[in-house]
Image 1 (tube, helix red, strand yellow):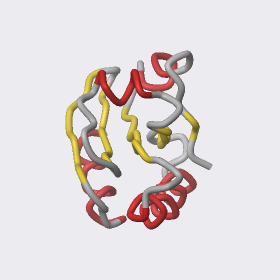
Image 2 (spheres, rainbow, N blue to C red; image 1 turned 180 degrees about the horizontal axis):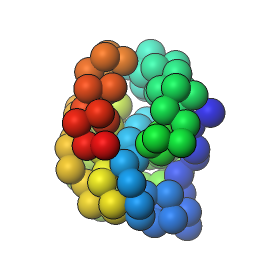
Image 3 (spheres, rainbow, N blue to C red; image 1 turned 90 degrees about the vertical axis):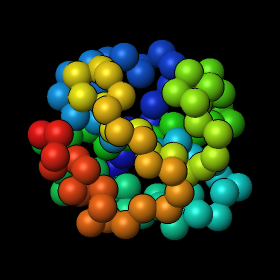
Image 4 (cartoon, rainbow, N blue to C red; image 1 turned 180 degrees about the vertical axis):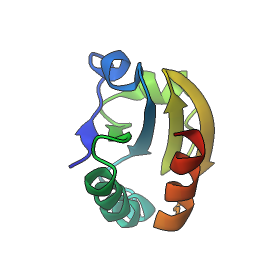
Length: 103
């Protein structure tokens, strides 16, 4: 299960290692297609990378901080710093490749 990120728990969840954050909203069609892929990766990469989601309606400050203009946007973090940003629906293979390249 992907971790739900808020501004309160953001730092502790991305401070170390590799983290993938999915910026989404419940009313977004492509986000609904992205979510099962994110959940699968969360199960498969447990202990290797943190896979999390940020509801942009509930956390507008985080979305703004990272320049999220359209959703879904997936941002890859390494030791707390953003290292890659993908906008739009992404395949599982593409996400796995991005994550692996930063492990």
